[in-house]
Image 1 (cartoon, rainbow, N blue to C red):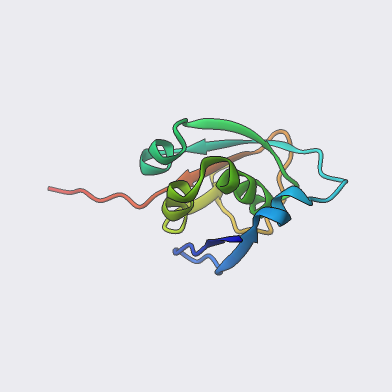
Image 2 (image 1 turned 90 degrees about the vertical axis):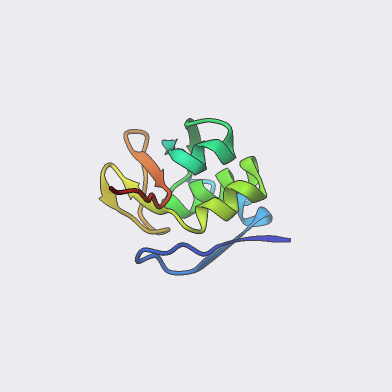
Length: 109
């Protein structure tokens, strides 16, 4: 029973499974801050969390398991940034890093 993330905006399509989130590397000891905005914040029920993970992909897999299908669906359309820079699933994270989940926005005049 897997959770699939299909993000746009330069991200490759990746797949995460619940078992992958639970069987993370024993070297993983990095607690990154996950910041969620707009519809991602609404789907998660919070705008901030701290999640153990060695890279962005591991953090998002755990977040998907934690927050459920609605969050995963929103995540599929989001851009992901680490410390203000565009990131992908393989981007490493440490305790000093902030991962931002930015859903697309619309607006104008």
